[in-house]
Image (cartoon, rainbow, N blue to C red; front, side):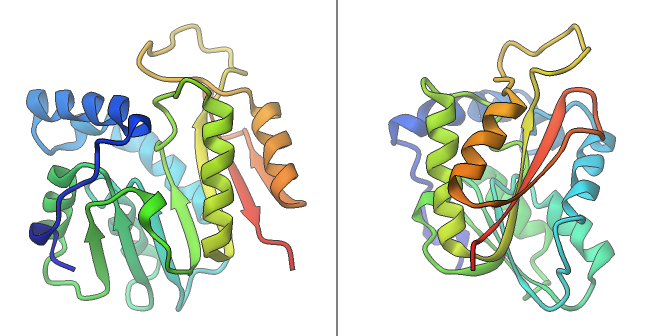
Length: 214
């Protein structure tokens, strides 16, 4: 699907703050790494390494919810160079345009300018890195709704990371929401009994794996 033929849907109230944050970043930095809101590529890569613990990805279909510039796909190419089918979704058409240009010669990857709520096709695995960092008026209800949606699509499992309020770090970015890991674990277990939580790789970050019930 050609990103040029679509427009991102950013008029939903849930998307307003997210779109405004990234539009301001794009005005300041263009479609580049600083506009994503991550501190540096090194911590981004640490998060991706944790994602690799989710399961065997060889020969699978992968959905990247909130793909940004396609950095996770570049990381996956290092790990599984020839045997993945990848779809990246993002609200921001500028990010999608840059990612599509970056991987234009790779027919195994598609980048689509839409929210993940609009995606209805099942995949093997879903990954979402940093997509919940900008909080909503009811952040835990928001997370629960979207994790449930992901579980309807992920045949084998999903991995999502969050900023943690259980940390010794004294500085917090006022733009971001820091979640209670125990509360995220509780709501994840309400959706499926097959849950893993990793809180051991960065001081203010954690990742949750959810696997569908069979």
